[in-house]
Image 1 (cartoon, rainbow, N blue to C red):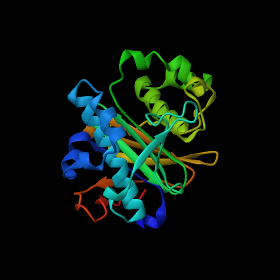
Image 2 (image 1 turned 60 degrees about the horizontal axis):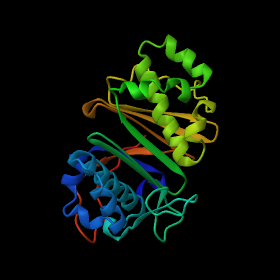
Image 3 (image 1 turned 90 degrees about the horizontal axis):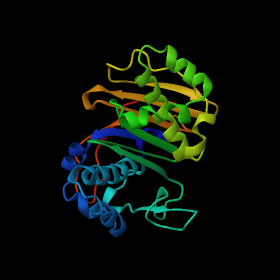
Length: 247
């Protein structure tokens, strides 16, 4: 089992993930393939597929078992649909997984305790930037106004709060009620690939900056998470390769 079972997360390029896993489509369930085929453009489809492959690689590393034996499923408690909802692994209720994708970059995480991951490009579209009033608390909005790079500050809080939603600690409509103004504001990490770990209540918050992929990510868990690196898939019958990197 990897690193004493602590949650492991990976941020990688879409092409890196798909290139590391031969015959990656065979890992997907029929539901996942149907959802992937619903994308009209090749890029978003590839991002979706890569995230769903990467979450299996993370779980395979956590469990020290083959990725091709893991079945990802989703279930919406509201409507009962298997097309959306919090992801999980069939037959493994003790394993928690999370995934995220943006243009050309994907992230995933797996752990024995609840974990959420989110990744976004560092260039914010105007539609996202304009959401600050609905996403940030009053203290966060004040900090954003004083920050040397307001967009970077907002994006850091955005990915953190997306993780809170995935953990069930917040709702999309109640993000402003989650005040993370006391966490590090991200100054000094925009142009260097590094991680920074902090705490908020009973949660660990791991910030990740990836200038090579022009992305920012966050991992939030009740256990101390770490970032791993993608390595070559070793093929059917073997655990997927993820190189460990302690944080």
